[in-house]
Length: 123
Image (cartoon, rainbow, N blue to C red):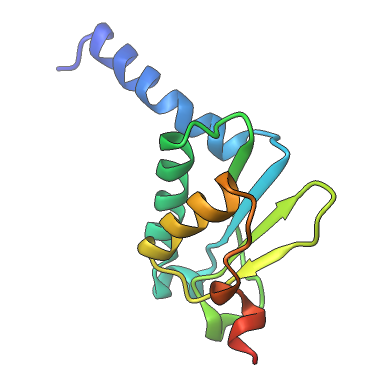
């Protein structure tokens, strides 16, 4: 049986992840989690963003959430990044390794990782 102290520790550990997933930060990372996205591996992508944002200490600046179908199933897993005052960036065919680079270069560094965007795929 789990004690009250153990439950409190679990709650405290998960609190930061809930804030990341439900916050109203200036930058929003939205992961397509419809059936096609999940089948293509979107769940590990969502988890990689949540963990990476927490690891980089971006909890107050970046919200990570999920949505249904984005409408470009052939490019799943798909992630859209919305930043205040900037054009939306759509990343496609993501992997956990690509997420790590996006966090470091885009979310921390402010530079879009163009080779992972839908624009690079369609050239």
